[in-house]
Length: 299
Ligand SMILES: [Zn+2]
Image (cartoon, rainbow, N blue to C red; front, side, top):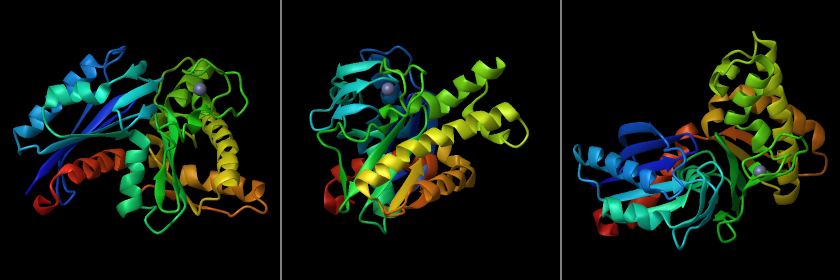
């Protein structure tokens, strides 16, 4: 049996898993993403430590890791990742030097889409959009059965201007992720109440706490604005939600469905689905990418 290390490097956490060639998760580790790591040194070191820890259980044959932001996937470069503070960083080579194994590198959300398209909620559709809502918001565009990325620039829907005056990590105001991401919801709640709680906690309180309810409804309303644009432009058969906030399940899907039902007239109405792999879609996708590197006869 072969094993790979899969690491989804998010804006807040690195979610790692030791995964077998049968896609069984043997062990998971979550650790905070190093802050202010502008040269990627701490992040690649952290990835190396995780791989060594996995190696104590099973030989790690390859490593798959994914990061957010605009990438040059072929060259292994992060062109820009607002939530990590990276610009033109050759992160794949940095990680390769530390782990000394075959390395597959991709975009966090497109990796999630790989898992959902091969074996998850998007598998029965030719045209779908995988939307990840976590520290940031981004989408993977699946058109004609393929994940399209336009040289790694496509899908940054977190920076669609949905019309508000909150500042975004990209330096502009009005961006979707500055008002509707998990981190934005937490900031909005703090602005209204002075208390710092996570988006998960906000979600738990939506029936008992007016502020939590308002922050959630506001996020949903702005999300719906962006989704309406996406559906009108790309006509997906399904919208698949991943990332931490996908754990909201019906509390996310039902109000969005109701708004889109009102707003879409002639457009194809997509099914709204929660990712089969939930918040782990990115990690499973990284495992898929790493397994793709192993010689076929050994998998
Ligand atoms: Zn922005």
